[in-house]
Length: 108
Length: 73
Image 1 (cartoon, rainbow over the protein chains, first blue to last red):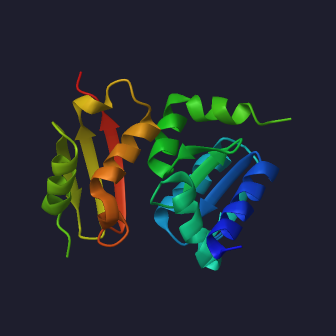
Image 2 (cartoon, rainbow over the protein chains, first blue to last red; image 1 turned 180 degrees about the vertical axis):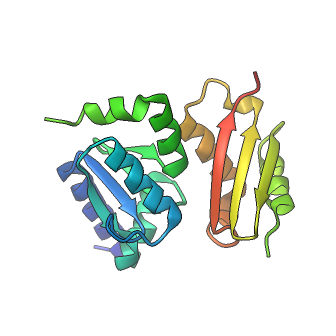
C-alpha cells in the first residue's frame, strides 16, 4: 500500500466517524493561523461539537486532505463527510444563517 | 514578492470575463471576484474555479487568499 492511499483511507475513516470535522492548523485551543482561528470561532458560535485535525502535526494528512477534496487551502470544514468550504465560505454561510442549518442536521 | 496585481492578472487570465478587486501585503490578500461563469454555481464551486485558475501558484507563491465570489447582477 502506498503512503498516498494509506492517508486517503485515514481521512475517510476520520470523516466517517465524525459528523463535523475541521482540518486546521493548530488546535481549537491554540490555532496557528488566523483563518483556522476564525473557523474555530465560527463553529463555537454555532454551539456545535466538532472533531479537529491538526495538519501541522501530520504532513501526510496536510497534503492528503488537499488532494482528497481538490481544495488547496486549510482550514477545511466537513459535515457528514462532505466539504462545506474554507473559512471564507464558513463565514458567509454563518452570516446568512445557513451554516447553523447545515450543522443542525448533525445534532443527535 | 507576489503583488495584488499579479494575482488579479492570474485570476483574470484563468477565468474569462472575471473582474477582480484585490488588496494585500504580499502575504495575505483579500479579493472580490465577479465572473459570469459563477452564475448558478455554489460558493464552493465558485471558490474551486478560482483555485483552479490559480493552479500551482496557490501551493507556492500565495500564502493566504481570502475571497468573496459572485456572479454579476
